[in-house]
Amino acid sequence: MDDIFIYKNVILIVEYTIGTPGEHLLMKNYFYNKVNSDKRAFIDFLLEEEKLNSFKSYYEEHIKGTYTKNQLILKTLYCSKQAISDDHKCLANDDIAFFDYHIVKYFSSLTKVIKRTSKFEFLDFLRIPHKSVGDNLNNSSKSSTDTFSGHILPEEKSSFKEGYKIVSFYIDAESLLKRAYVFRQSGWRDVENVGHYQRMLVSKKINSMRKYLSEKDRVFINNIISSIATDKIKLYDSKGNELKLNSNGQFLGENSIEVMPASIEINDECNIIGIIDGQHRTFAYHEGDDQYEKTISKQRKIQNLLVTGILFPSGEPVQKRINFEANLFLEINSNQTNASSQLKQEIELMLSPFSSVAIAKKILQGLNKSGPLGNLIEQYWYETGKIKTASIVSYGLRPLIKIEDVKAKDSIYAIWDNSSKHKLKTKDEENFDLLEQYVNFCVEKIRDIFIAFKASIPNERWHTYAPNVPQGVLTVTFINGVLNVLRLLIESGKISSIEDYKIKLTHVSEFDFRAYKSSQYRKMGEDIFNKYFAN
Image (tube, rainbow, N blue to C red; front, side, top):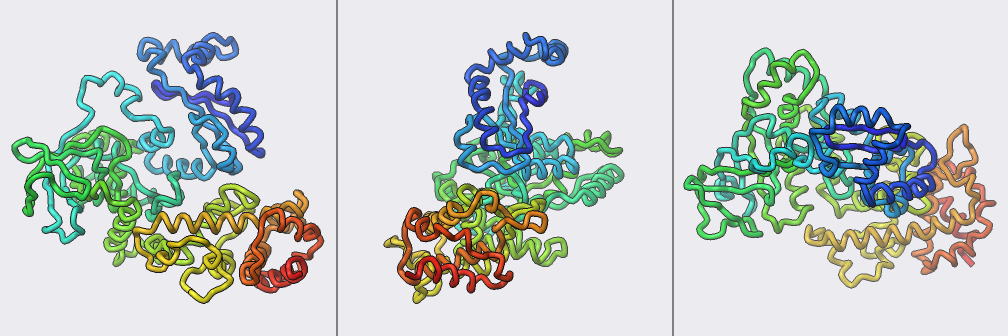
């Protein structure tokens, strides 16, 4: 163990590594399995081990008498400077939280701005329910929900899609902060399944808002736009009768087409209200350590913010919800200077998941997860020494995976044996499962040929090229060159197995990859094809 961190009844066992994490993780996993098989026994060990006297002292002073051993939550946090492949993570104990470096950078940025309030999101990352932490354990007799006064706006009054209900209610800042989350770029949630269209909080903007709150001592009057998980909320009419919704978002029984007052009961849980617009106004109330905290600590409990929440039908596909939220964000910010053109382009890309660019990006994410290109492709802004993606998407992948050109004979789409594949051309939002199948097929076919190349190129050369490590073969030119080889194999009907590729590429390490300039992707692909595959 490198470190032990304690927060109330949560104990984190922390491991750090800056070397190659694969083998290191597998060795440590034996220990983690032992720990997680009997956490109570491990806590007893921590108290009895002479070398851990500091833990015992802390336990005696801060934990004993406040929490029982059964109330203690033990978690393992594995921190690696280098990326860990999904293949290795899958072999590790399920109870391990992987604090990957991009996640470290995200929480580092977040905590600098909203200080202690970031604990709610960090607990969610650790998969620890807020109700199980600290004083919440002793509040089991209290309701696990809070009720707020508001109104329900039916779709007839909003012109939104049928089944999309709008609720507006007032909620104190403290209660909202606990429940709020934001799908931010460079966050920790799955980049494939969530639209990360919002930027990181701007410290200067937060500070100016906290100054306003402290000096003016009054609430912001703008409303917060959000989405709310329907399984975390209950609605009651003015008489206290529960208003239940079916999977299509319609009230069971008689549906009112008028705005109606309601009591809105929301679960006392973290990360269930998604902030679409208004994250700065929300997080200006964070628990900080500045000169404004004394005043704002009181305001958090008494000042109410107006929240307008969208209730999606429970049967609505996740991608449709994400698209709706992103479109709404665009509508709100399209005329504002604080939404950059680059950000808008990223949102548009997310809103067009069937475009060649969007498919190419998903394929790159798949290739980066495992295999010969695993953890070698740049994904995050802070990464250095990895393969850049822009030119690969534009010049390598787009021609290889295109679905628009029905006459194309050099696209992976042409060899995809799926009877429903023509449906991808309609770009119907109902076909996301089919899209995922195509992405997975593309990843498989591309990975096959890269496996063969890697098998024939010495390990000391299979890394990214840099002036100080000139022996590395992995460059954008090399990647696009190989992708062009695959296009020619498809066009000539010579797609084969990994083993056959390996045989053909037995002597490919002798090929002079460095002889090709940055834009000579096609030429490199043709020369490799003619030398190793033409006959």
